[in-house]
Image 1 (cartoon, rainbow over the protein chains, first blue to last red):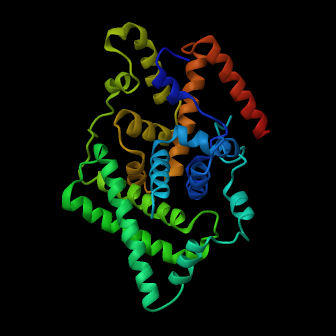
Image 2 (image 1 turned 60 degrees about the horizontal axis):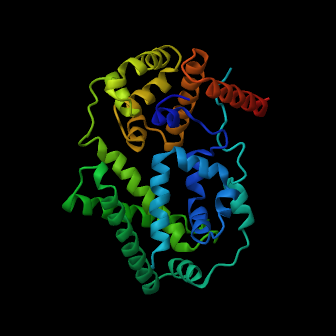
Image 3 (image 1 turned 45 degrees about the vertical axis):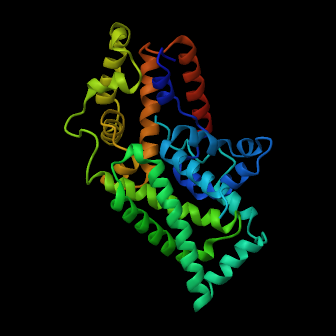
Length: 74
Length: 245
């Protein structure tokens, strides 16, 4: 731990992080779970995906976009 | 010791295979079934479905390009052209992989993922047409700013930054160093670096992940992290060793 939170976030790695490939493969499934999620069960069921989204800005960007698109009326 | 050989995917329960396996025999909702049926048909019905889906994909591509406008210089007709390219390529991929839709989500959510990934990929390619960051130097002087270090606290962070520099030079592999310099020092977007290095997002992410772990371990070993962090670092390393053994 340092005095600089941004550096701490950069240096922190989560062993449960599933990486980009697996995240993107199931992103559509996870997004719908989140949209229907009343009690946070999606995050509890897929902690490795949550860990990845917290550490990977490009995948989190894609997640946020898909969440918005899937939540809007088609 | 091989650093972080498989931190990703091996420990998480939410694997792609587990999700697809459990969804194999899932019945499709009516709207999704309609999409699959019409896109799998021929003639006018299919053409109408393709046109409708293209419109939906185009709307999302435009929206996402606008949402990311602070991170790229594309505007006006060029933005619209990129959105059209993303929608067209996504439509092609969707129709080509229609058999791969198993109903784990609504069809539209599954389809939207294609166009969102196309937008990310195209922005990565476009970056090199008009790079918005300086690529001529390694710019170590930018490191403190990247990590929110106040110039006024120079005396506090100087040693840490010097140590980081030394570890990057001496301990990282050439590939890890290349990725660190591009993303952290030069500010190259990850998806743009994917294009430059001819690889994929996962490979770049894992390379940087391994570099981050190595930097943290070395900083801790050299006394640059607090005692609590050193302890956590040792615990994490021990846990990872246990998983690999």
